[in-house]
Length: 260
Image 1: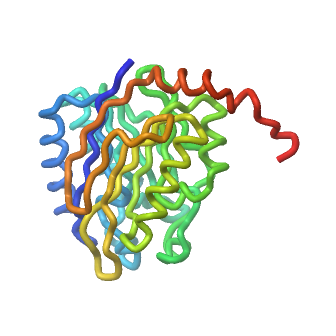
Image 2: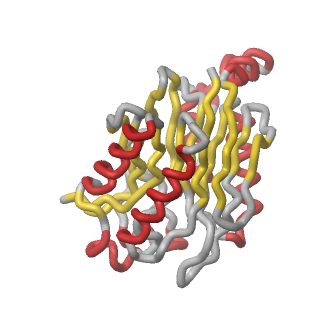
């Protein structure tokens, strides 16, 4: 099986959801012209990191975003890794990834497990408590958000349960671009899985973002990579490579977790 992937490395209007919905729709419509199987958006694409105003601008139970993504997934018959958004609940606000399949069904909601203190997430967001596992076309995948990639045990917790493709949505700052690339390549190699990572471009009042969305195969080879500016990045995953990598170097068989 092969999947054609479209990564939407878009700029995000700081604290302006109405504008961001319009921009995201334009990007998805543009991506759909290439007939991808899966389209992936970046982290907090509806609001950006306007954390101090999240009570005002976050999406109540993610209802607006889910309706928006469902309509576009059905229209274009594409799976949507809907990046992440600020989801308001009775318990607080979560940084939530939304997965919509090509029939317009909500497949998964994943709340960012690891909150990034350097950008004050812990003051405004609630940490997630559930895994990011989901299936598309009967293939097991997993979703993660930005800072999550610094915790390799979190990705391994998903690949030992069958995940073959790791989708990451991020707003990763430019000063740590080298970390972004190194961590993602490492996560692909050690898990013998595809990594599809979408970062934003542009800046907000406090940060300049790195861009460099990237698709990496299970051997750690880069399939394609964007630059710093906004870009539609297209790449193809040949999913048989996961089986090949895991059979040639049997990392999962040779694990000795009783000693870890």
